[in-house]
Image 1 (cartoon, helix red, strand yellow):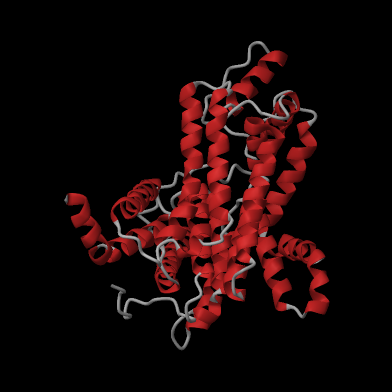
Image 2 (spheres, rainbow, N blue to C red):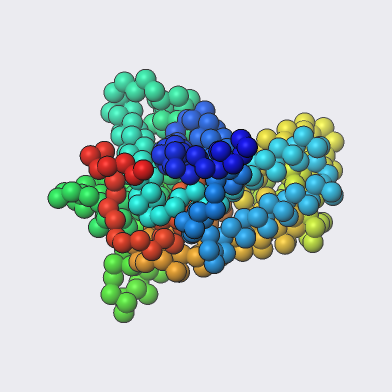
Length: 428
């Protein structure tokens, strides 16, 4: 009786609540972990409630139809769960890692819960508003203005608001690409000009305020591909030279980039001469070397989910019995190698297949939506070369929620909308 009553009421009465949760999820990414965690929990509960109680709605999960991404996500989670049977990691670390990869479900939930493009545009509007708040706060920190909501321990020194300059640089680079590719959809007489201004303001923040080298590389890649898409087809081969040209220009115009590039060269050169690397690049190279050794020893099955730190400790002890073990929160700062250690070479192929599934789904979209989604995917692929950008909290949540939103936005074929403004009537 209760179930049938809820099934009758929920579809009509909770649609605003559902949309509010979706908008909260898109607004939370890039903000504090407390807000992100709460929004993810509500997103999951909303998904379960709709699945259990709501009547069969022909619009529910419409963007999942013939999409490859949900299948790839579920297969990925199944592979990590199956590796629990042979993992060498402590059970707590293994289960914790499965939970961390569970954030991939946010992609499927966003696609399933968003019913049409109009709802997706409301969610995109909240995403833009939150990211504008993040970029403006970083500029305020740079100008030494009071920002009492900045909780990052790098707020006063590196101008990161809620996370590290590494995460924020990547996030702001993607935000710039979103503003640029959706500039024609911005509402109002000056909407397009405002979107372009936000794109350049965000890029300026990445190049001249934040110090994250990963963010610089992602921004250069997204800027290069955006320029390529604006060029006539006969000139698009110039994209091969664009990143190098942009790096050269930025090297002489941005003290941040000049300093960080020079630092990378120095750290890499000193890596081979140091007994125990202590620099950022040196530590990464050491972690990557151990990861490759582990993959070489278990190439087909890996060592199981959550096993990276156990494998690293084992390999370190073989060369140094006095090695002090690291805990399960460590990772190699490279997503491809991390999946390789846990699932072997098939794990790397699974990660690449997941990205290819997203790419395949974007090919069905109209131009602005496809380009925005492909830019986010390119940013993820590059970020994973230097960080564990899916495994890590905050940056992983950002990519999962955003990619789910962009897929839902592009796969719906409604009439061309504009980004919702507070003056527009809220859907019921």
